[in-house]
Length: 178
Image (cartoon, rainbow, N blue to C red):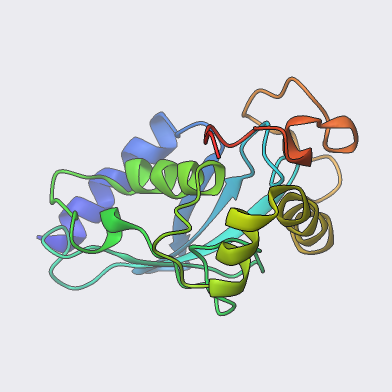
C-alpha cells in the first residue's frame, strides 16, 4: 500500500507541484526522496533554496514521513542536524496529508516560527528578544548555506530582493505581531 501511495503522490507532484517546493525519489528507492524548499518571500530566508531529505516509513501514509533539512538553517524549530519540530510531522499527522502539503507546511514554518516549541533554544530566545538580530543571522545563514545554483528561477513570487528586504530587518515579515 505504501508504495502505491508514494507513486500516486509522485505523479501528483510532477503534474502540479506546490509553489516553491520540489521532491522526488533518490534513484530507484521510492522510500527515500530529496527535495527543495524555496525561502518564503518577505522573510530572512527569501532568496534561499533549502534541501531536504524525505524518508517514507513502510506503513506510509499511516505514519508520517521523516523530513530533515540537509541545508543548514538558523531557525527556532530546526536543529543543527536539520531535524524539524512541526506538529504536522508528529502528533497532528493524518493519512490524508500528501507530501506536497507537508512540504508547504515546512515552508510555512520558515515564514512563521514557533519559538515556544523550539529545537534550537538559542535562536528561539533571540527570535523572542531581538528579532532584528535573529533576522540578520537567519539571512546570513541563508546567503552562506542556501544559495541556489546559477540560473535557478524561483517559483514563489517576491516583492523585494534579499538585499533590500525591509521586512526581514525586524519590522514584521513573518506574519507574527511580536
